[in-house]
Length: 367
Image (cartoon, rainbow, N blue to C red):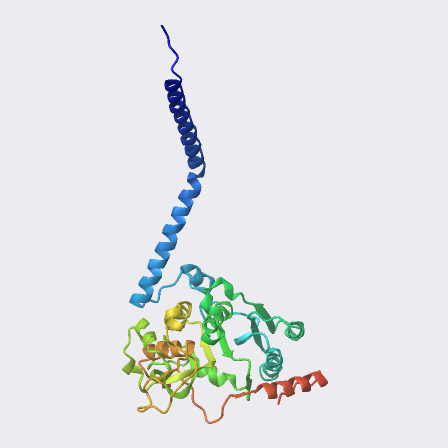
């Protein structure tokens, strides 16, 4: 005869309830897990990509490799079929084009720069690269530089690695020079505080395009100006490691002054000068090694070629590159003349320059 035992009934009911709850919970978990599997897989995939990118960057830094993301090089014209001088050049302008850039607070200098170039080189196109410049004066610059012989390019540095936008590194300078070379074929780059003193540009062009080696024009396309400092004195030691060259090769080679440089986009310049310069600029550990600084130079150290404690960033990189490619013979790429082609304009002089232009819009004479 069946007898009801409340204790057994309760125990069995509790077991069944637990089992039912477990089944429902597992079913819900599996449903959710199955539904989110793509998201989890995506997360894992992205993590692997970031880890690989970190490992690649670490390898580049440790081994000091001039290796950068190909997308950056593509943006700057480094392709399998590059636009090279003299075939691919601007036909509606005398070459070289004159290139500079501007940041906020440089409007008066830029306006004076444009008028000075127009006076001395009326047949040469001016390209102004606008790097984050926003102010009331921007419309004035657009109005002044609004013709077939003058153009403003709003250049977005944010598409490149973050360090490129740091003004003191000057990593952007090789990039805008390369961009202009890719567009026009030949570039005279000048900082916007420089002013021309003469219009004898044909002498500079002749020097840049002359054969650098006897009866050999393959290394033509460069003209620079040198400073009195040795490359080794203002270049962080870690930068030399990227170019696989000992520092003592540069004890008696003078630094290049990158505030002015003339370049033609020949095959040699494109592959041997601009490519490594751009690659170094895109790698923070190359262009701005840990411990490097623009100030704090101690030039009282002896001998004078010893590292002075300050670093010249893009100027150091191009000085190393030119030294290597021209056998440490700066006479092959550095121009010397008793009569300077440029002079420097201070902020005060730029203000006076701007006031004169504003008072007499028809006056083209620059102080």
